[in-house]
Image (cartoon, rainbow, N blue to C red; front, side, top):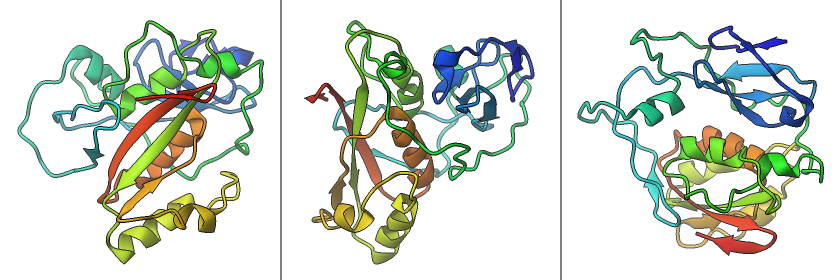
Length: 222
């Protein structure tokens, strides 16, 4: 039986979890399960309590890390950010956003249910929810995300974004993607939840706004 890389409690990881993001039932830490069935490093805990901006549909959400007034987080949000329910800070090694133990492969029919969208589930309220929402099981088919990036007016920001997109394991033609940059806005093609999660972690420190749409079997919903 595997152990959570964050709280080291025993967890049950089956074949259907391979290549997906897994939420520890004990400490609620989110981590990636490699194709060999072994858990990767957990996402870092947020030590400072901050107010999480609302995130719905096309509404842009700027990634701002400036200090905000301290406001207690609701229990569900505290769990997403990996805070210890006992009040003690849980040390966690910061994850490497470029750490792909295995190349990202297309979602197969057998693993598609791992990225399904439950018909009765509400839209995620923040990027942390995207991770859990991406792993929800349902029969509606594979889920895709379309990311919309705004605020790309500075050449330095565009250059950093290009570096984040440049990875052969993404399988993207970066020149073709950047050719669609217009008026500081770039709309990326549909991608599976794993790629979307990795890309969001790579660009969250950039001064840009990120919004998203969901696509299931070619039907887009905001």
